Amino acid sequence: MRVTTETERIAVLTLSSEIVRAAGAFLRDEGFLEILPVLLSPITDPLHHETYAGSVDFYGAPYQLMKSMIFHKQIALRTVPRIFCFSPNVRMEPPERAALGRYLAEFVQLDLEVRDASRDDVLALGEGLVVAVLKAVGERCPDELARLGRNLKIPSAPFVRIRYADAADRFGEPFDDALSASIDAPVWVIDFPRRVREFYDREDPGRPDVLLDMDLIYPEGYGEALSGGEREHELPRILDRLRRDGIPRERVSAYLTYVEKGVPRSAGFGIGVERLTRYVAGLDRIEDARLFPKIPGDTRAI
Ligand code: ASP
Ligand code: MG
Image: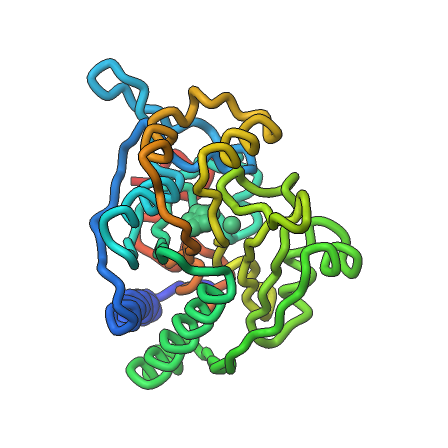
């Protein structure tokens, strides 16, 4: 649906607020500490896909608006073992992406990271988080769901897992939309090939070019929910990945300084809050999931 009335808008904002509350409560119960977000840094997620640079002149030094806190999460784990953050990110996607209805150029992701965790650990955590949030929304916001005509199904864990290569065989590439339209409960895509992901996703030591990472895909055509995985954390492996992925090491030198001092083994993920709100509320377009949306290419936004 599209939001056209103030009553519907209030219902969506109430769902979004409950999502944030329930997710934070779930993670605190799981022993996580919430850290405050970083907005500007010399290091941020290089991302695999193209976005315009969000550069800022920081007292003469080239800083960037955060695309994700991936490196800060790894560095934070030197201090605290389980962290999460509601992290505002700016990814100036090409304007033609706006038509897809699932991209905002400014969005918030719930970004988390766990020291000494495996991918299996964070898959289970992601399932617990999604189920807990959907249950909380169902119990605490039935009137808002009814107002939006949304009949939300609570999935049960564990979610189905599909290997990237198998999904690509079945649907072709990219397959998010076709896969999402074909399922009626969230599904994990695992084992992305190195060529489509970032250098920080850990390569399986036993399977060259296969990563120990994942995406969660919403059902009903809502597409990607979250991305994450195990991380590269050892300096020689990171330098090797930078070389093979064609990324100059100077671009992430501030990060490498911490890797030299030691960042722990970890796994984690980031789940988009507006995309989760869109799914929960059953919205056609992501700009209806928040106030002050920045649609890619639309310079009328405030
Ligand atoms: N935050 C994500 C992660 O933890 C990456 C992303 O933002 O796409 O892997
Ligand atoms: Mg992603």
